[in-house]
Amino acid sequence: MLVTGGAGFIGSNFVHHVLDHTDDTITVLDAMTYAGNAASLEGLPTERFRLVKGSVCDAALVDELVAAHDITVHFAAESHNDNSLNDPSPFVQTNIVGTYELLQAVRRHEKRYHHISTDEVYGDLELDDPERFTENTPYNPSSPYSSTKAGSDLLVRAWVRSFGVQATLSNCSNNYGPRQHVEKFIPRQITNVIDGIRPKLYGTGENVRDWIHVDDHNAAVLRILEAGRIGETYLIGADGEKNNLEVIELILTLMGQPSNAYDHVNDRPGHDMRYAIDSTKLRTELGWAPRFSDFESGLSDTIEWYRSNEDWWRPMKQATEAKYAKTGQ
Ligand code: NAD
Ligand code: DAU
Image 1: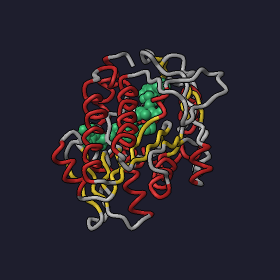
Image 2: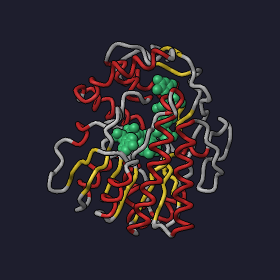
Image 3: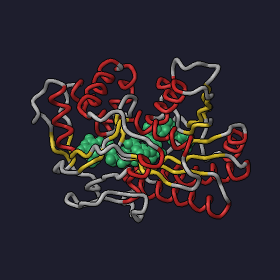
């Protein structure tokens, strides 16, 4: 298997998951941007795993690697909304051009391809909307990040229809778990509390995200690789809707702090209000179900992971907070 972006949060957890649960061998292609962390791949069996440093925008390298593997699973992306508001350029390059290069290579070599995407391509829902996102929800992305992910999804769909590429797609909601960069909401607050800094809540904190444990996401991806129908999209979600205020209060409580010991900071421009996934298709067609149904216990394990792995996140903390300080967040 070729796994792009395998040194990032979800990709590295996927590599661990596949090596633990199958006999497959894996090559990771990762540009090792600020979000790639070699420490996330330490200790893996060298006879079944290797890391190639390079970009998915490098057509020659992509061609060579795709040709040498049976399946490509494409996680690599610029993934953070706030960064996309400060500088959209790498999002267009990696998310759109990088996906194009992979699609051309899998087309040339007639290889199986799975495309990892996000629920953010559907835009957002009102807080009181009874509907959730399904595979038939129209695309309506809000940010430079989500619009480039939407663009990449549409390229995949076009390459399936026009060129018969053997691809599947999945769109997942917000992941949490070990090895997530400290720029993201949950690890940022956990590491803030460890450092004696008050957690930072954007705007009023009413915004809702539909949380899923990263291992549940990756188990769903493996299931789609085994049994997903070519050309199909599967939404991945675990019925985990929570507003940001609830999550911050829970983190503070689990870490032994007063639940109101957080600060309101500047809101994100264009901030999506609510995401919510209906994963009926994945559950009924492929028999997938989440294992981490208790958010509080999954969050508690995640807090423990950050407490025990300070060496992993400490090198990126200061630069991340310096970036947020510039936007008053
Ligand atoms: P991440 O930012 O933690 O990791 C991204 C990885 O891609 C990093 O290792 C980085 O070095 C690598 N990368 C960036 N540009 C590259 C390039 N040009 N060539 C090769 N590698 C490059 O991201 P993540 O949170 O693990 O997200 C992985 C994928 O899952 C993304 O496609 C994202 O859109 C999608 N997704 C994320 C979530 C979430 O909650 N984090 C939810 C749904 C979907
Ligand atoms: O829905 C899937 C998406 O989830 C993925 O496609 C993205 O790659 C991933 O980054 C995530 O996007 P979000 O923008 O929802 O995640 P983020 O962790 O940046 O923020 C989660 C919520 O918390 C959001 O409403 C903004 C808010 N927030 C974030 C930070 C960093 C805060 O209130 N304070 C913060 O300090």
